[in-house]
Structures are given as C-alpha cells and as structure tokens.
Amino acid sequence: REPLGCTLKVVTGDVEQILVIPAGGSYQASSDPRVIVPTGDATSIQSLVLNWPDGSREEWNDLPIQAELTLIQGTGH
Image (cartoon, rainbow, N blue to C red; front, side):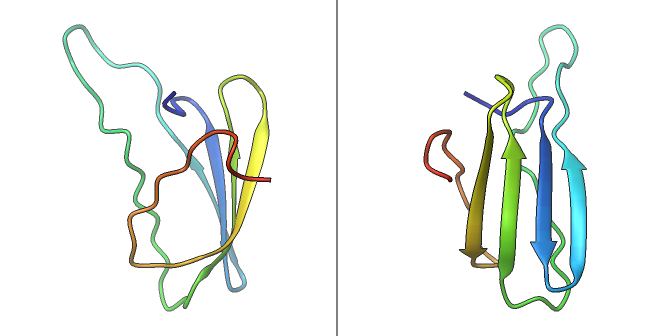
C-alpha cells in the first residue's frame, strides 16, 4: 500500500524535517510515490517516522543516505 496523504518525519543530525506525501491527483493521472529527502551534510538518517493511512505509526533508525529505500508497512518498529 502506498503511503499517500501520510506524514514522514526525518531526523538527520540536529535537523528534523516533516514531509507530507501528497494524496490524490486528477483524472487519468498518476503520481510518483517516491519522496526525495534532502540530507545536507548528514552521514546517516538517525530516524524516520512514517504515519500510515490506517493510523499506524512506524519508525526506522540508522538508515543510509544517498540510497533508495523502500519502506514496507510492518517492517519498522
């Protein structure tokens, strides 16, 4: 399931970002489910918290930067 309409909190170093994954679109249009997170000079993502469409919340820690990550519901903590 795609996390459309969800919020994503990303912590890198002393920087905390809140990103909103857009939901919806227009007739016969598709949207890119990828989210690009600017990390600046950080060496890792300390924590990433995703609030899923069903209201559940998951967190992943110590993630690499400069990588494409696929977050699957039920694999965080």
